[in-house]
Length: 523
Image (cartoon, rainbow, N blue to C red; front, top):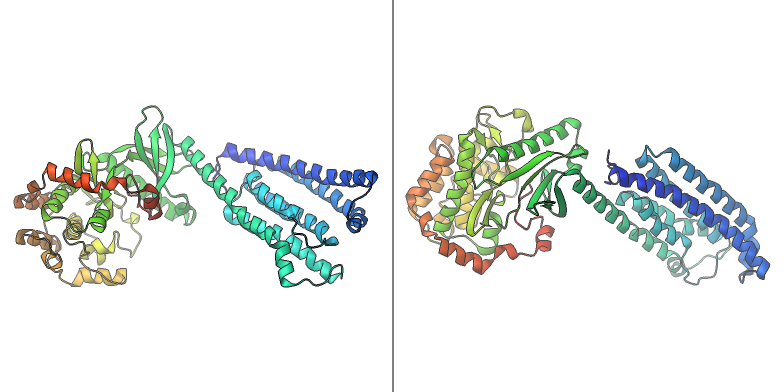
């Protein structure tokens, strides 16, 4: 099983444990060699620093011999704990600190004049994380403790009157390299941790080679991937390890079940406007994953945030495609329950542009057969800004019309560039959806919105579900009757994409913002 402490696959973890044993023997050789070098130097004419030469045999030789015994013991322990690698790596961090304490003892027994020389402690602080990888947090704590050994023994030397009290500037100049190296020690720890996770996932997920991480969300992490044989680009979504590690077993099982349900829902639906699923299953460490198409496009959320509200005909054209995907889900007895602009993408597919894809069925629920255990008690499922009043009230008999309400909110966003309601807290926002009548979209934008489209949006946002279109197909029919979608022609769409080229957004910038390029939601 993979160590939760290092994220390394078992074979790489075993190699790290062997390196601990080898490094311990090298430390033993180094300590023994130091004593030998001392005597050879004395035989050749003595050390330049006679003060230090006079104290090296006492306590230098006993300390060196004790360090040799300690290092050999650590090597022996490493052989005994090969079946408990996490424990061994933790003990190894303790060995690092004790070794630093012995070096600090010798360094500061008779402190040298202030020369700016760097302590040997710095070398082992920087070297050890590459030998025995630990989590960045553990590596930092151990490195800081090791770095403190020189100033600790220097304080003892002051107490012994072996050295006069230094000024604060002298003290800082003498020991700041130790702490600089301690902070730098987390770099190899983070690099090894990240590489270990990539190696693990790449091996565990069959035919797909994982590339860079594209993003993460509430339930999963998404990676760029490529099929080893077909060279087909894909996206792999994995349930987030920290999500499972931070909760109880029951909660972890609930998250896995939601993740599995999302994959099954996507696999069940055949609309070209639903994200296509290639494969799904369990990885070697028991984590759930699925492989889906990699989108080249932009979310409705980013579309409006970058370019402003869209023309009524384009908004209707986009929503007709969304309704086709959700309509199939409703026909199969499924409710999405989390429709929002960040889950809806307009993409390039082949030679087509403005081709909509619906993502994230993680909260999908059967209209008649939904499992109530997949929703935490007293918590409304979904996103407050797009949540139907009956969901905010926690009514158990919600049906497809909650998706229709969310689709009305999405259409409102496309037309106006604004949310239906805004508030400082989710609770106040849900209260507005329950109580307040929404203003017509045409009153909140300078773009022209026909009265008939206003009426459709307000019908979707009706407080009483009975006053809304019955499902996504009914909404699609009402939007189609307006005839607006036909005005957004392929030529107009092509010109927009050629002008704005949204897929050229810098990938690094998008990842820093928690988004994904190529466009793919991971929440």
